[in-house]
Amino acid sequence: MVLSPMTAALILVHGEDKTAGVIQLLKRSFDFPRIRVKVWYAPIVLLMPGVMVLSYGLTRLMGSPLPAPQFPILATLAMLATFFVAALAEELGWTGYVLDPLQTRWNALQASLVLGLVWAAWHLVPLLQVHRSTTWIAWQCLNIVAIRVLYVWLYNNAGKNVFVAALFHTMQNVSWMLFPDYGSHYDPRMVGLITAFAAASVTVIWGPRTLARYRNA
Image (cartoon, rainbow, N blue to C red; front, side):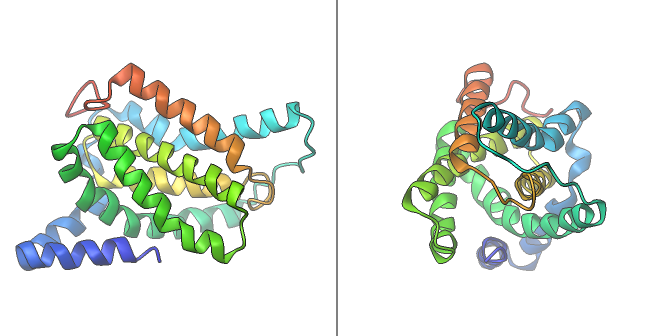
């Protein structure tokens, strides 16, 4: 499943620009030198762990029992490596191929929401296959759409490179897997509301047109 966005993008790029286009898209996998303002690494790496820590704290305050968080070092390192490869395959399609044309046609927020809705729909089959309830899926879809706004915000502010999206995607997946014990008590309602608040905040502060103050940060 995670290979399908990249595969589709490579097929389409090859049809448009042949091998040169394919090579150019693949090169975007590690275009991190375009991140000129290094402070953007902070939200890229820390935002999603912060969301999960806040979700954990609020859940505890509401009286719901939660096990103590588990941070197995070797397992976490393995997840970071595995999830990065998977995230790169996804983001070469979602961010590397699809996003910029959407932003050219619409503004950054509209592009985020359109892409987020497609991304949410893309998750429906696997969520149904693991027998998630309709309510669970609805909250998770809110989270998916909202978090895509954060992807675009980071992408536009940090040099418009795919590496940013892949790294942020990696941290997203590792964070929920460690909440608090391999995703055992993950609550999409709590996480979705926090993420939606974060997405709304960056939209208000940075503006919906570009979600960025500096185009070449």
